[in-house]
Length: 200
Image 1 (cartoon, rainbow, N blue to C red):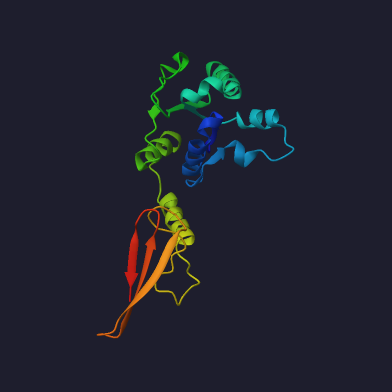
Image 2: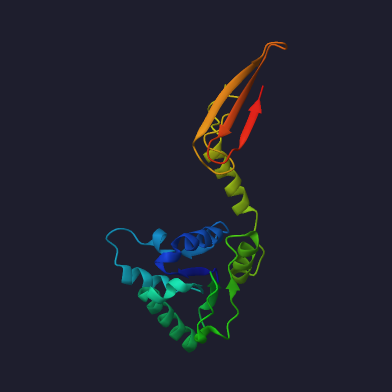
């Protein structure tokens, strides 16, 4: 059976939830992530109930859980199904120094390290049983070039749209002429992180 993954998180952990969803989707895994599955006008309750018919329930645990009433309902519903039927597989991911809830003490959890390759490997392997492919890395490299480099500006020796180090658009361009050799040097600098590059 192909895995269907539901990601349960509190609103304070939305950014990390999106990152994890992207890790998994890049592997071709069917991911239920509310921002992707719930459109304007949809019934949130019905959408979540449909999503909870999953094979894997990834629950993100952090200090933000205390205020997340909706997440508690998702978890209670899933836990009741797990106790009754043995599914879905519950995958706890701890985002800070929190401890797993007592109800999950017997389930192996992963302490998230901030979106590292180790995190990606652990998550993908726990769901598919296989190591991650290169799909995610290829997608990142492709997106990096789309965002950072202006490939349409063929006359520019330094066609950066943003700083490749910090992502800032605050780039300063200049040029100097070496009259002795009759050569022009083009310089680009980031005014935020001091990155720089040059070309003839």
